[in-house]
Structures are given as C-alpha cells and as structure tokens.
Image (cartoon, rainbow, N blue to C red; front, side, top):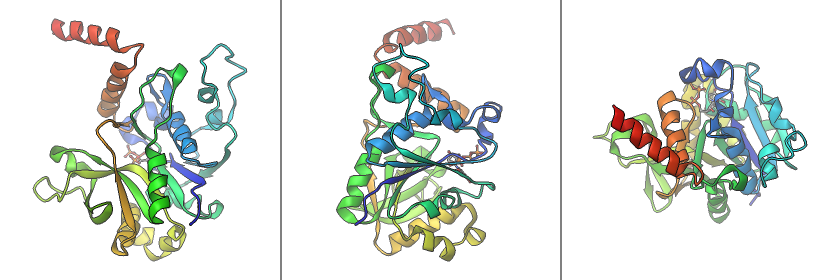
Length: 288
Ligand code: UTP
C-alpha cells in the first residue's frame, strides 16, 4: 500500500459568500484570530506525514507570500518558526483551476504530479482541538488520524462530524456500519436523514481517482462529481469514515456569520484571550 505523501489543498473557489473581502484577500488566507487558515492546513498536512503540498488556486488569487520564509524578517516572533514558514522543507506545487467546476475538478488539476493515495483538504475548513497561543501552535491531528485509517484499511477515507439534526440539510450526510460508509445523501431533509454525520472537508483519495474522473465526468455530474466518485468507492465497499469526537471544533471561513462565530469560539478557548474576551462579551451583552 502506498504511503500518503501528497496533500492537495483546494483553494480556487470564488468565495462569493465572503465578498467583498474575498475580492481582495483569499478566504483561505483569512486569520483565525492571528493564524491564517492556510497555515493551519499546511501544518496539519505536514504533521500527517505529507512532504509534497499541492495548492489549487485560481489566477485571481495570490498565495505567493506562503512560499517565503518570513523568519528573518520578524526575528522576534514566537518560539514556533513554522508559522512564519509553514511550507518549511516540504516540496510545494501551485496548480491553477481556470474554471470553478467543483472539488473533483479542482483536485484533477494536480493529478499529473501525484502518484499513490493522497490527502485532500478543503481550503476554507479548519478542524482542530488545539487552541494554544500562536507561540506554541500545534497542528490539528485530524489528517493524521485519517492517514492511519487509510494505512489500516487501504481504502478511500473521509472525516465525518456530527452536525446535529437541524443542520443535516446543509451537508453530505453519511450512514455507517462500523467505519464502513453505507450511504451518502446530499443535503437531506431532517426527517429523511439516516444519520447526523457529515463529510467535513478531509479525505484520503486512492490512486484510482484519475481513472474515475473519466468514468464519472464533470460534464455529467457537475459539482457533484466528487460525490459520484465517493459513492463508487462506497458501492465497492472501499470507503471508510473517521468520526471526529466532540473535542474537535469545525471552523469555516467561507461564510461571514460562521466565520465570526468560529473566531469567537477559538478566541474564547485561547489561554491569553479567553478571560478578557469573556468579560468583555458579558459586559457587552448586559448593555443590550
Ligand atoms: P466552496 O464551495 O465552499 O467555496 O468550496 P466557493 O465556491 O469558493 O464558495 P462560494 O459559494 O463562491 O462562496 C470549498 C473549498 O473548495 C475550493 C474553495 O476555494 C474552498 O476552499 N474550491 C471550490 C475549489 O478549489 N474549486 C472549485 O471549483 C470549488
């Protein structure tokens, strides 16, 4: 079984729900308090053992500063050198998606430079249990757990998160037998949902992905091409899920209110801000 050495971070979307800011700054570069989303993702992928990082972008976005080592520019910052040079020793690749035709199409931009199974990370989704200050930043272990599940099973895998019954209509909902995926339903009604577990933006795709792109074409499936490919793996009994526990927070920089609550939730858990922010919020709420 191939090792998971490649990570693909998809970040080519238009980000229309985050306009106007996304017209100037990629939503994948927005800070969760003081650490950009992209830094969380790159360091999570590297912690999972990936040494080749692929960023899928569009000509309208600029991730070039990520390629610079900023440590010499800001010598006084932090104990953790990786936050000023997240790519570090990793090999990196920038791929352009010129038409935004969905997740599988975005990943396909990197296909020719990947061999073997690979990690996929949605560029605007952070999944983490870590809320340390930036000086002692720790990457999320969600991708590490997914790589371990792939190593045990040899199968394609996805992380899933319990979103609760009131939110199932917004997500791809899966039902499981053990860790084997039995069904995937896109955005079901609350009444019809077989579970409350949603795919949450971390996957391992197996090396048959490129061949499946032709079989489940973007012309036929549009933005649901990735779901068609996941369902194919499921039908073959080759799709596993890792259920995230309740210590993991799911933060999304793709929508203003969700991103606002993400920032507050994370800041409340940060040791250096939690108490003061709590006091300020209490005072502010008592005023209204
Ligand atoms: P989203 O569908 O949430 O992002 O994709 P979007 O299309 O940018 O959002 P809106 O609807 O315009 O507001 C999740 C992730 O997948 C990337 C996005 O950049 C985002 O990080 N993506 C999405 C691509 O790279 N290519 C695509 O064709 C679609």
